[in-house]
Length: 359
Image (cartoon, rainbow, N blue to C red; front, side):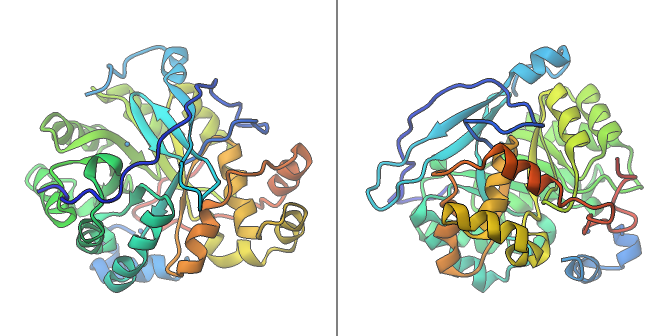
């Protein structure tokens, strides 16, 4: 069921453990990382809502300090002469997650199958998809066709809210594994908290599929602080990450600080703010000082705060550009200036019936 061939191996590593970064300041060693279906009416309805907007580890019941200590940063150094950047990884509760991931949200099957070989070639190993994206099969085909070795990859997918039922949850995960052509994923997330199924019940179903060997690690997505705390408290296994919207226009420091106290890594999606980031004059001016684009500056800003970041592009020339963010560091002043771009109405993704009351 897993990929064959194995032409593409994982780059060798220079690994250095570091302390968990203070999310409020620059770090010298960086790290990273749609209405209910009843409201939306169908999968297409959910895409209408969203389209306009835009890794069994130790027991989770530990002190906050102990849990936080389990999140560390490492750096992965690729040996290929054509690539001089390093790839950081985030370690959380035994998971080793490449700090920069390649996301396939709102990408067609054709786009996924065309761009994934380029992403693998330049060094991406972390791929993020979801049941609702309807492109898990395309990603599985692309990775298999490229000869990627399964053990070299970090695959994340997300369970859709309609499958938060005892008679559907595990079966839907089996379907995802079939489409991805793997026996298990590395990280399985609950996509949205929604308003129909209790958090404790969602976590129980997630834990059952992990115990059955269908995922190595579990996490959540789009949870507020209270929901994240409940998830950590009731889960028999550690919650590795909370995947949330993060970009320069949305202040997520409160959620990030709470996650850090619980040893939960933050994975940032929508880092380009639906195309606003590349056009931003402040980010472009900062980028000019480093010979970088505004998009690279924004991705660097994310990893310098200690987040896992998801990049996305269907343009081959942009793939290597997105990865070229490990050869510079933003100054304290620039980090502060970017943080000042946040605004009260900066959130872009908040579908009714799916999104919680945000912090």
